[in-house]
Image (tube, rainbow, N blue to C red; front, side, top):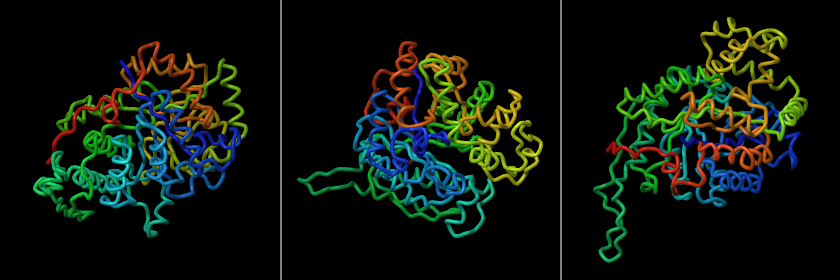
Length: 435
């Protein structure tokens, strides 16, 4: 079985200490050459896609390090597209703080400009402070966000599919440019949106952008099963990951889809060294440069308790976390942290060390990283991993140069791209004709 591997670019690295650890300027994350180098490196390793986060507020990082998704993902991915030919380009964008027509146009444009390599990671946004940048009303409750997201996705897909595949004619002799009978208006009127349509753009080479989705709550799982091609999730144990994948695939079948139509790719933070000791030294140096404070504050936000409730050398206050019925953050990140802390009986300090920003973390040699990946694949827990690189560019270079060759020797990863579009390279089934 060949797996999916993508790489997430978050600021200068997923680790809080990355900006101090790495060589290079502290503000490289706004330099186009930085992104061009990352894209070329990832494509040299035949990774399936580059994955960009989107940050609409500074409240989580509080200027302690680069905001992990400060740049507009679509603009940044367009720069990366110009320096690559095959690798997919996936950008995160919120269904709560966008309008469907603008978002559909933005990602359709990226899909055309990259010749069919674009993907959209649909999120509902869980950081309450973001609402202050969009009118000041409070962040909607979890169920409300997902109700809007479902309608949002319906509209976006409807716009992307508003042109039939053979609507483009371009016959200079007859003067027929487009067969207008094969372009339909949407005329959508719903609870959240009224959108006439059609799209201003024809279909791309891959039909439409690939839909990624990030969410592990009840609403998130159901949304993924109905709409997503690929699900990005936080899973820290094989048991939880296997249960999650089984559940989403079962739900997809309930929506009339093939179970194989939805690919599950949890986050994985590899810290690589030529020896185990070297990897641990890299991690310890990153942790030393990070300090405890910023990561503790972020953990408190992610699990929904005051930072004062987290005592470093005590267990995670699980009862207090579960008692927060009004929690509006990411259920996936919260549940993954609780699962890891309780299953392995970790203190808060140990959780901060072991938890890669909410994702599974492996500190070790390329062989140890490959072993972990192989174990999860053989258990049926995943279809691949979204690599949360600790520090750029060295962390990505280590994966491409040392981990990827081992995965290929084990027949777990591709030697080259299967085709020219992201949909083809991910092994996704043909698109259904919803019209």
